[in-house]
Image (cartoon, rainbow, N blue to C red; front, top):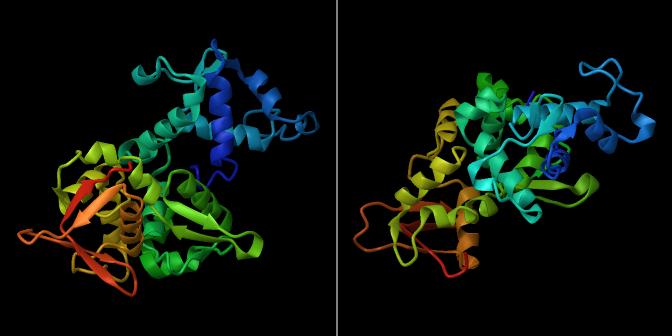
Length: 299
């Protein structure tokens, strides 16, 4: 199971479990947490589940929280594992702490594989290769497009149904890699890593210092291996039935994300006359050459 194949494991449910346990100074008994999370009318359902008399929604969400290392068993109680950087955690920081913990697992290929999340990385990397100018329907099954793009490797993405694809979109949006717009039958999803990139600019850029675009992309890929140059993205690109462009062109999704960050004042982009190498930002109908990046005034 993973956060895309475990259909109950959407971000808000896992956060609610994490927050409830984190806010309990001495941890929580599983039965106590279940009684809070499960309405009485459902308490008798799911008695044949692996975990006993509990609803599938609760048991599957809790199981995924455990796999991600968000929750651990301490005797009869559930606790949030301690970390050095969160020993003084305040309640207002709970969601930031939750998001940080999820990212630490999901975007570390070895930890992701150990937690059963390897398919999530392939699925997200594949989604980020899609053209945001041609958004996908939230209700469309992804299998045909996966087979077209990845051939025999399509199964690596763990997107075997519409429900798994929708879970991917929920998590991609939560992690800052997608925008979902519309409602009902008009709901559409766009690959959009703007927010994910924006949150780590302080880690890869220095104020008043231009760096080469390839250095910037390399540092970014070290944090998010699903982006260009990342180990997962590179592996996925090697699986594709149609090889990607070889002219140093970034995907449209990444190109638009960088331009949005420029428009917001978060970064500056330039092409210096003596630059050894430049990358091409692809906006669909137009392109732009960029050789250097600098952090902007608005982070």
